[in-house]
Image 1 (tube, one colour):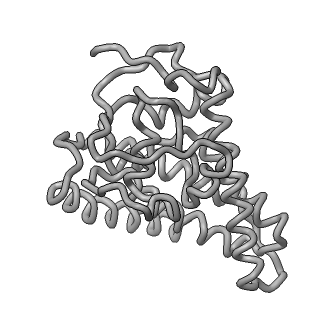
Image 2 (image 1 turned 90 degrees about the horizontal axis):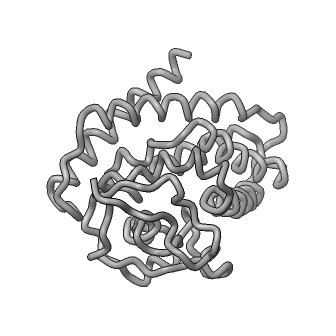
Length: 234
């Protein structure tokens, strides 16, 4: 428990120090990040970490690079499927909408994840490990690495779109996912190839509108063509 608390504290301190500075230097949009939002995000991160630890177990089998890569690919595919379902299945959207709360995008948004979402994403990662025969300790580090990268993806940084967006998830790639006034797209966490294969890829635009509105209660997209949610003025 002590090691978990220290790890959580170190991770939170790293994110606050690093991304508060970066968002001041090269912001994508001018929007202050309230202290209370950081506090809530940090608490949700602790809950997510506890859930992930509860779902991960140790394995006596030795790890191998090939199995680790296979586990990662399988976990990415499962993560994509779960994330896409969260935007299509009404009862899943009820939980996932916390992450899409209409506030301007910033690094702390990465931690605005409902515990149900956290459990489903951790289960998707664990499933990849089980199918690949990979030991769970390696997948725990995978979860930590992914969580660190998601902070980068959500950060309020003026990251211009480029050809790299089709190879690996970038802030420009993921910011397009959070453009609430546009059709839902870019569900992959690190591999945009999945979106390209299943027809959900959309190029990012530096001028995309992010946040600044509120969502209606009938926001979920069930048509595949309409916007993911409707927006109403504050």
